[in-house]
Length: 186
Image (cartoon, rainbow, N blue to C red; front, side, top):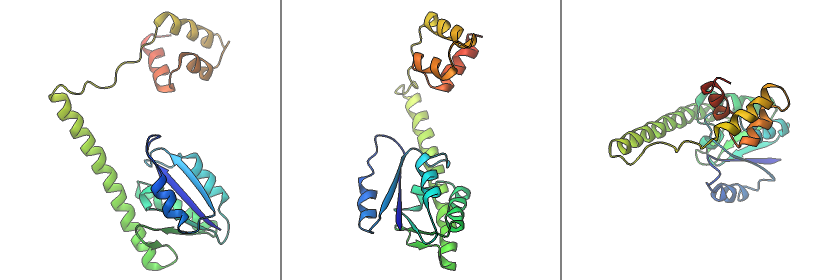
């Protein structure tokens, strides 16, 4: 079976270009993740790797869609190989069944990691420039009503509700919730 994996970094990004390329390759099953490729904690990636069987071919538009880190990419490709499957990247024209394909995979993986580093560096530089020009002040702080936060935390601390339920009630992500707990020494 030909299996496609598609990844875009944010919910706002469109995966249409990747879908079209993979459909042209006769892909029978596709997996989609809408999150960063900085690590391998992606649900559809794991599902695809679990699904792959002997003789399947995993196809991606480019290796940067699979991973942005050399070690992660090589580990993923090794998992694919261990399942008896083959890996193909269309953009780089890499087929890991050949010795030269394995070599090129390593080279392109390092380039993808370098590209991610450049993206982060440009982003930091842009933010610094915007700050010096007074155009960037960071994210707006989340408006948390302290009395409501304390009330919900009290329920959480007394084990009436779980931390997840408390976060849901307050509409907060875990890092914000726990930071706020620490700040208020609750």
